[in-house]
Image 1: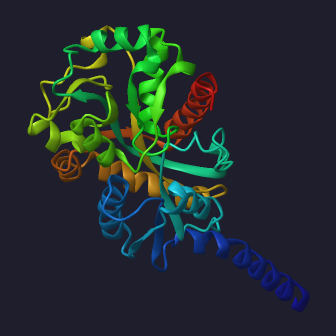
Image 2 (image 1 turned 180 degrees about the horizontal axis):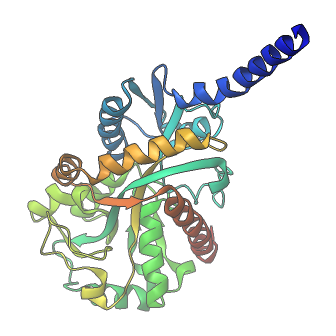
Length: 322
């Protein structure tokens, strides 16, 4: 009887020890969570991350604290996300990163991260000077195709980022010889747009909201937006399909990820919370008010989309000679 009692106690103890780790994980989060933002304070990635952090705190009852790490054009922040312990207490907002490897900046891969959800997509805009002789996108593309080296294309930041990749993809689709393009790196989209307005550039691709003040003042004009639909805030700018008969959706995207190996119960809890947040009217209203596009992809779809982007971006940069 005594042996049976001891055996029973041991069985119960082993069962408790086996269940405890799973139970502890299911109680996540038990302390504040950090969200790494691979950009400086005030930009679009930072703004949307803070919007998420506020709502995730409401969902989980713990603070979600933003830490900005924009050094090295985001390499420092993305490295921090990749190298985090996969326990759910260090997450990150990620954006287009496929260009870092071919440009020799970092060796990031989709497999380095656990996709949770995509919540944003901002289509690129094709901006030219207000006094440009181009009144339609095909006119601009034909001129650039005829003599690619004659025109200055502002990259904004580095020439492998989301906006230059978008416009180079468009040029390739139009048959422009990419190796002859005159692409000019800079200190960001805002500075490039100012250079455009001043006459120092011929074309600058960027998000349309970034160009909003210069568009409103009439100093520059947009010939197309690289999305499937016109933007609510800029209804007079045609889509690529409307302007040139091209079905492409190109621009910058953002999503929430964790490091590779994030436990399924934590990633599922976050995905469910993100589903509720991104589908809520107040989230969508605030995104539209701030000029951001709403794009929802589940964890599975977001992972597949990042893989697709990784292949396509690296192929276009190879064609471009980077």
